[in-house]
Structure formats: structure tokens, C-alpha cells
Length: 97
Image (spheres, rainbow, N blue to C red):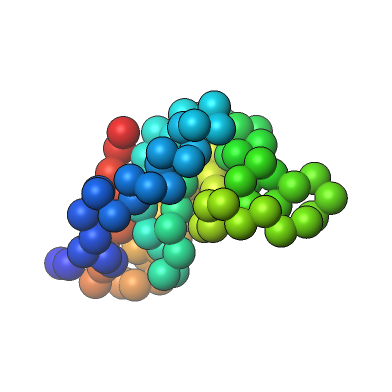
């Protein structure tokens, strides 16, 4: 079995710094479908972080941090789906913070 990416946690440092500086507390980071993926305790926090750092409430591009934004439970379901679609060939590498 191999992981879906081989990036070290340090690859995410710049994005995590921006997210934390904006007042959000991600609990995990990963990469899925070639996109950086940020995980928060709740879907509401994930949505608020997205609206602050990627797109504002008027759907205007902000673009400070780009990726997938998930609450913890939704993320776990997405990981299961991803791994199932890959027939166990690839496991999602998650850095829990």
C-alpha cells in the first residue's frame, strides 16, 4: 500500500500560517485529488475559513489560500470514499495537528 502523496508537513507551513493568522484552527491537513486539503472541527468553521481566505461572501476571489475545506466528519467520509475508489491501492496521508 502506498500513500496518495509524499509531501512532508512542512510543505503546508505557509498556508497553515495564513489560516492561523486569520484566526482559524485547522485540526488536520492533507492533499486529495491534487488539492491541498484543510480540516476543521466543524463544517461551519471550514466554510468561514473558505469565505475568508479563498472566496468572500460575494463569491469574489480572495485567493490567499486555495484548496478543499472540510469539517472533520465530512473529511473522514471523503477519505473513505477516496480510498474505496482506489480499491485499497492508495491510502490518504493525513497530518493531524
